[in-house]
Length: 515
Ligand code: NAP
Image 1: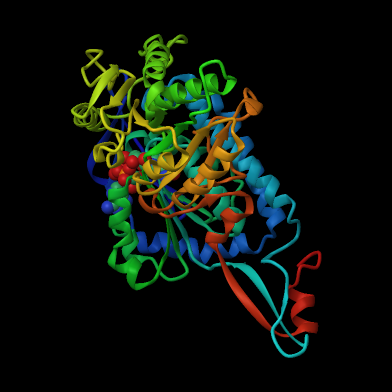
Image 2: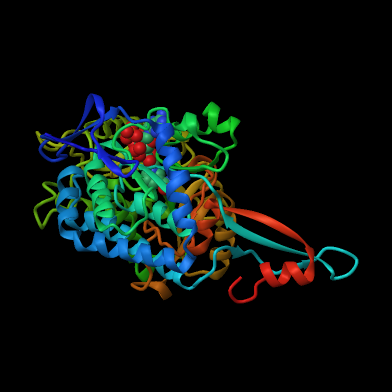
């Protein structure tokens, strides 16, 4: 059995203590194991701060961007092997595996592009300078400079490649050395990506460390220049937010948690509209892509009550014809969930929601003898305001149609019952509806996606996280923010106001080229 090693202090080490097994999600055969003990996490942090950080900060943004491009190429060269590992360990179809792996490759390349445009700069200037005194002699500028700590990344199991590398791309470009911890059930894919990063020899010593298994007492040793970026469930996010040392040291934290994402079908859209087809295909894709284990997947589908029958029939027909099965077979459209515990949680979650709904297709019953399989499940709520649907994220291929009265204000009110989300999508061709709904959804969502006939076949679906747009959301979604082009670097940089004589301050720290 393969033991996943950790890469700490520039060497691979096997952990100690009890083994945590990883399984093939289709056959339930053990694939590998992690062992969490035996790592000196205080030394891991010190190595990042003392060795990796100075080496990265000695480089300009443009030079660090070149490192990201080299990493993107190194991972791309092993793309086929990574897809195969993902099919086995994460139960993904080839297409779902590409979503994760190409996401990692593409996000690194995108950040290489954002960084190379900064050329030889070593800090960023934030906005225009400002006169602070009676005369322009007393002047102020805002700068963003690299912080001096380690960037600790605790990642979720559902995107083992993308989640690690989208965080790493922002941190490394900002000049922060990273310590990556993947979600354990799919850590085989993350581990192989880590091995590729190390084998590439692209990064300076100490810039990249990887922990397979638990992070032990690492959080207890974090300090005020360190940062923690987390992706995972709201329950774990809440624990981390309240962690005594993180609170005491005011460690910078970014939390990306779960989300009851919604899709709203506007009352102006009838079945003949192009955007109705977009709505159906996006919702069906969200339910089934990565077997619904996508933080941005739609969970609540708000449909005008006089359209519920049509939408239910159309979606159920689309979902029922998809082949669910062995993800290695080319005609399979949906594979298993990633782990036995996910299967248990998803089945229980479907049962809890189904008690308040009609089951249009699917359900919690086992559909294969072996493997972590569940059917694509569409529920139709008896009452669109029922709290059950606005409280529980079933992290699998399950979504619920919630009837509403067709009024934009009602759709916004119902969307807000989710307590804060990553993405809400609206399907409408009516400009007044679009404006009202976007402004109503925005305070509660990190991203609002608008589909219309004008965009049919030209936009990317709402479940897709793009490096140039921010990802994250308020409230239940964690209150965090990642990506968004250069905005994603701010978490790893210190914004400092510089005040003094304009002649000095503006020439050194203003927006002049090379600043
Ligand atoms: P999870 O159980 O919260 O685990 C997330 C990560 O935290 C894993 O690496 C886990 O390690 C680690 N962890 C768990 N307890 C910890 C603790 N006490 N201290 C330090 N680390 C700890 O979530 P998950 O099951 O992996 O992921 C599914 C959830 O993530 C879903 O709710 C989904 O919505 C959410 N998600 C959100 C986003 C987003 O961008 N907002 C993206 C993807 C997923 P182990 O695996 O070793 O336990």
